[in-house]
Structures are given as structure tokens and as C-alpha cells.
Length: 190
Image 1 (cartoon, rainbow, N blue to C red):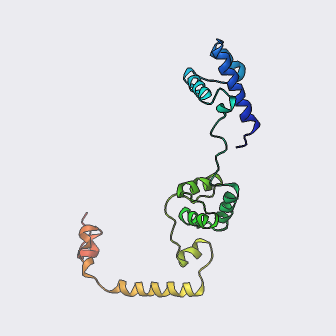
Image 2 (tube, rainbow, N blue to C red):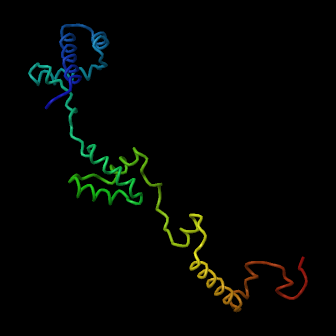
Image 3 (cartoon, rainbow, N blue to C red):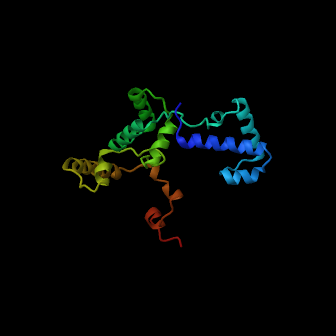
């Protein structure tokens, strides 16, 4: 595996540190001179790694470098463009599309993390259900003639049902007190 020069240089400096400490120099001074901050425990770990690798600086190369990223740059750019084009898409749908297009399996949480880095996430909670009446009125557009006629019919139907006496409202005064004059025909009870 090809490593960047900085990683190789760090492994060579670490080898110098191990050799100088083994020769008797104090760890604190060698740390400061070579730009490390190793503790005694970290030093013991690096010494074991060095010895197991045959006393070569190649054994000290940082093994974390060079891991492949699942969400590579082309995938991320496609994801950002797809989300910007359709804001209603959610992570589960995007995960399926990524699997189909790139043959890469990501979790919903990782997709949301990537979207959050570009401020493309949806607000928390469930999305509102949009009905045609609420949507057009919310956008500041006046209601269409068809919506106006539907509202007029709804209001007319409500007034017809309001004129019909209902037995369930006869005793409502018990729960919703009001002026007794209208209820009993008498004067104010106060």
C-alpha cells in the first residue's frame, strides 16, 4: 500500500525515539525534540510493535491510514444533488437508491449524517400532511372559484344543522354556565 510521505516520516521519527530511549535518554526530552507526546504505556506498545515487526521503521507505520471510504466523493455529490432536487426524500429511500446505483450499503443514520453536514436534513418530527385547501391558502394564494363554492356549501350545510334543536345541548347549562335569564326565563341570579 502506498503511504503519504508524512506517514513514512512519522514512522522513521518514532523509530529514532525508540532507539534513543533504549539508549538511556529521558522519554520527556526525546518526545519534545521529535514532536511526540508518548506516555510510558504508549511507548511500551510501540516498542512491542517495533520488535514484532523485525526492528524496522516500516512496522511503525500508522495502520489506520488508507482505509477505503464507503461514501466516496462521487456518491456524496450524487446524494447532495439528489436531495437538493427533491427535498421530500428521506434516508430510507436514499439508502435504497444508493444501493442500486453504487452497490454500496449505508445506514439511514449515516445518510442523515452526510446530509446534516451540508444542512440538507429535514426538520425534526413528522412532516405535515398537505391538503389542497390548506396548501393554497398557506402559500398566500386566494382560493379558487371551485374552493370558494365548496366552502359556501359547507357553511350553508352547517347553518342548516345548527337550526335543528338537539337534546344533547338541553342540559349544557350544567357544564357551561351562562346567564340564567335566557335559560329559565327569569332574571339574573346574581
